[in-house]
Amino acid sequence: MRREPAETLRVLLPRVRIARRVHQLGVQISRDFRGESVILVGVLKGACIFLADLSREIALNATFDFLAAGSYGQSNETSGQVRLLKDLDTSIEGRNVIVVEDILDTGVTLNYLVRLLRQRHPKALRVAALLDKADRRIQPFTADYVGFRIPNRFVVGYGLDYAERYRNLKDICVLRMAKGKAESKAK
Ligand code: IMP
Ligand code: MG
Image 1 (cartoon, rainbow, N blue to C red):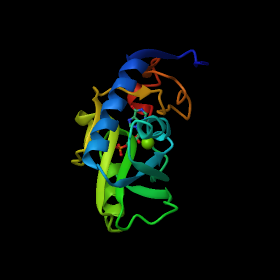
Image 2: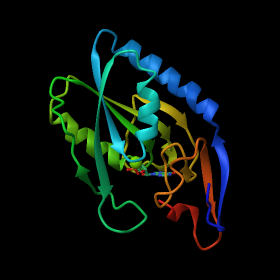
Image 3: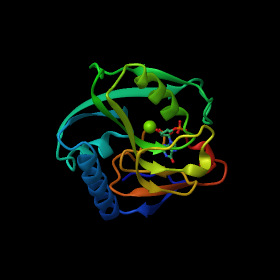
Image 4: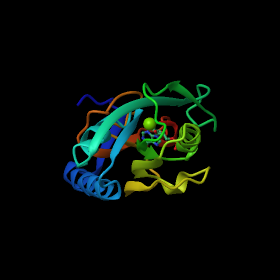
């Protein structure tokens, strides 16, 4: 994997731990929705690898849909305002919806998305977040399914990016930047 000289990677969650946890989440979801079908709504682009693996651990009829959200403005720090960049292709009315997200950080994105999707009257609306950085929350939010609670570090890999790079790492790694490119600015 090509790496900028100023960036170093340290494995936080190795692929075997991720696989084991994703399997457990799939078992739990399959149990919670036994006898029903679900629609997995992936939040682009970070959640695509998690969704691909999680869906194969779910023993139910499952369909996929995707949406994309982004925050207003150019700043690295979240502005607290989110907008929809890509909407779902299908109706979720009366369906069991599981929003699949890579990481729950400030909570701004998922608060916005859940409020939006609830207006469409799904039968059930749940959120699965692979990672949860609870210390960073500026808006309260609790996901129904959480893979790992992690400390306040900037992480990449398994779908998560820094400037669109590193999504294809198999492990989840902490990205450290040399001085002048602070970790907190890496959003
Ligand atoms: P929130 O609205 O602050 O909860 O934003 C969540 C989004 O911020 C995620 O979907 C990621 O795109 C991004 N994000 C937050 N923390 C990280 C990180 O450590 N690495 C990569 N992306 C992150
Ligand atoms: Mg994301």
